[in-house]
Length: 427
Ligand SMILES: Cc1cc2nc3c(=O)[nH]c(=O)nc-3n(C[C@H](O)[C@H](O)[C@H](O)COP(=O)(O)OP(=O)(O)OC[C@H]3O[C@@H](n4cnc5c(N)ncnc54)[C@H](O)[C@@H]3O)c2cc1C
Image 1 (tube, rainbow, N blue to C red):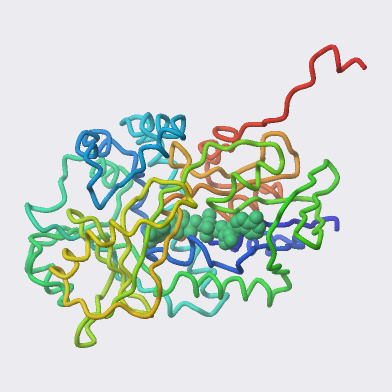
Image 2: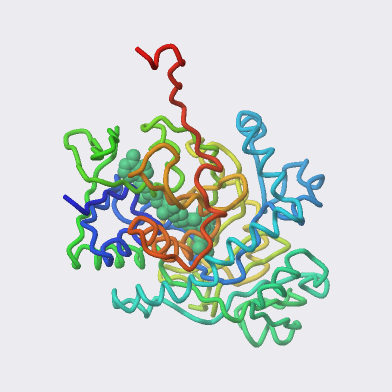
């Protein structure tokens, strides 16, 4: 047991971390109550894009706050009571949408997004599933106006990080995506972006490779944890899994896991939904398309076209709210020849988001053998493998070529253990 580690959570981040740890000689037990990639990592839009380093809480959001007061936008909905209950998170989230903070966030996230595609490709090569990847770019489509605004904060960041991009006029857009109806006036193509045709299967195949390479995958729910200096015991209903280190990679449930070790975490989720549709006459899309003004993404997947929605700020476990999906449906029908919905149910996922939209990657504040990697908000599919590399290098004491300071976990993880009063310490 000299180099053993338990990883809680088999989503994009946990699976990727388990693989990187395994490659560094760790005896890894990957634990998930649902099996690999059955939660947030299952239902996302499948996009891998270096240019996705500007978070939702950016100056653009800050400037248009008043327009969200009616709470009727497909891009962002909120439950006011939930926001009130999580006011510290909400206020810090807003604080971080200012220009200086957003620019820092973009820099930190770019250190992850810029390495994402290469890291995925290395995993795909090993798992033999490169056929799931299409390197065809990611398209934003605009219904009115000239398209992407070069004066924005986001445009400055694209320039700053030299993100490959191309402006398209209406004709060029039509040539690129013949299945789109002629309602768009302009497009903006992220030329270096890629996408996968089934994120859940992709990650399941990574997990299968991890098991073939000697890793242990346990299907169980962690109910409690004893973490001492010398060993970690993760308890399920019947069993105990013992290791000498622990990595918490439970995405939107990481706060619950850390509570078991007397921590509180300023974490909220940005909920989102997907539904699968066929296009009429067997048509499909060549790449993921984001309708910027109407607030939905259409991604061609193995199982049909996946429609994904904007952000629903509510409690992770509150009843699903399909109002954004229902709201965008007429706009989708304007955009493509939409056929039937497939038999797959409407899915809800929970993007795990810390107030500054940067993940927590590093050591838990009060433990020498507990590590964390969570909080990947909208970009956790793409940044899972690079996060896995970073955290496994940190755990293994190897040098890391990414600046990890911006991801310091103590930003938002606090101990809830009461300090002993001074008089009690001498007894
Ligand atoms: C609509 C939508 C679209 C998105 N589109 C994209 C995109 O195009 N590109 C992109 O990069 N990202 C996208 N994302 C974001 C991305 O999906 C997430 O950031 C990512 O999946 C988070 O991965 P994770 O491993 O941290 O969490 P998860 O995938 O949620 O994994 C956490 C795991 O922990 C397990 N767990 C929790 N508690 C316990 C317990 N007590 N015991 C055992 N196991 C436990 C859960 O079962 C779960 O499997 C999108 C998200 C949504 C919702």
